[in-house]
Image (tube, rainbow, N blue to C red; front, side, top):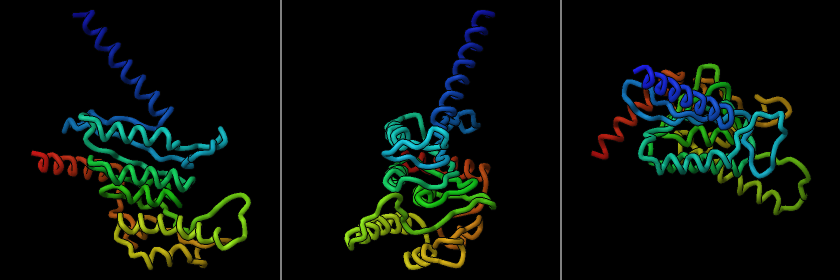
Length: 238
């Protein structure tokens, strides 16, 4: 009996070690110690969303080459029943952010997002890509037009390309939340809120009133809602 107990303790320690490593390296974890015995994958979108170019080693980043394969594995898994996305991001690479948002929106598993410190710029499409979204009372969302770093060629084709990218983002956001396109574009072009720039900062309840986020709430409401969606999804499959 003593030997079996030691094996069990060693197994639990190995499990905790693996979870700690996944959190440290990828910011991901499987939540499974709940009374409903539902396996929930926790995905964190933290810092800057990194695309094709590597960012500074001192920067907190979310690498899309880590996130996309994991989302594919979740879709193919018979164990994972839902996904909880926690966001505290300044934005980042547009193509990478949209790729993550598209993957999340196409999952057949129930999904819930929770905006904590902030979900700015390309973080907005990711926040609205889930089945239901929350934002904490002090959470912020920055809505602004597409920006580009580095050299820009001053020709009409460049501005046409900017508009194409902007339309992709605007179209995705409007398809996945309640805000109307005209109002979203108005928030993007606001000049009286952000200094030295254009755009709008929405805090907590303001994001809900604008129809971008579904509800104000924290981790308790987010997990409770996800459990409910998992239960409803299970009934549909029966």
